[in-house]
Length: 218
Image (cartoon, rainbow, N blue to C red; front, side, top):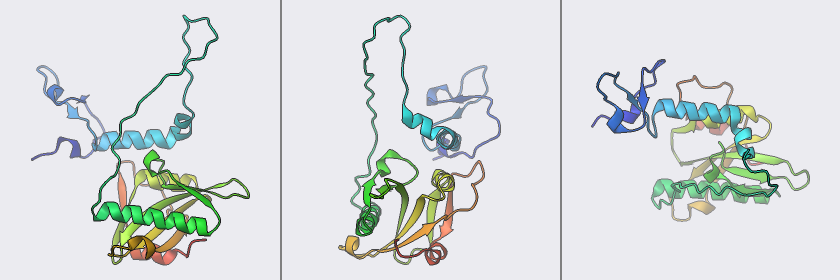
């Protein structure tokens, strides 16, 4: 079946829509159906986060011009999201890799927290107690013997924007039930050197080459 969301991006769209029923309307050009996973939507989100991530994190203040009182009220917003609760190999590998890196950070005297669910472009924020400075760690866990690793465009941009604070943690996860206690870890600083092209959503890197560039966690 042809997937309407997986079309390559174009430089110009005569018309787009977000509902399948509106793709074909009499008298109007055929619309591009924009949905989760569409390259145009992915590029728009990546560009927005790249330019305005810090501003979005600050939140906003809403002012009612018709209300002259000084009473402060809160606007409650509920966000629904899908969390990774998989128990298959991929889900277990991701959990084992993150757990191993957090343990390595604690052994170094730092205070790590898992922020992967926040979609920050990295997985762990690790605080240095003496200074309060944060280490931002993107975790990539692969089964021992894997050839490549995939990094998203957003992850690359975040690394380029935080060259002195971001660490790419490469974790080799063994095929075993006790994988969390037998992981091998290499840390790689300044892992990327240029921003991907606009239409690129992710990049595959040679795992062994990155691994050889890394060092033991420090």
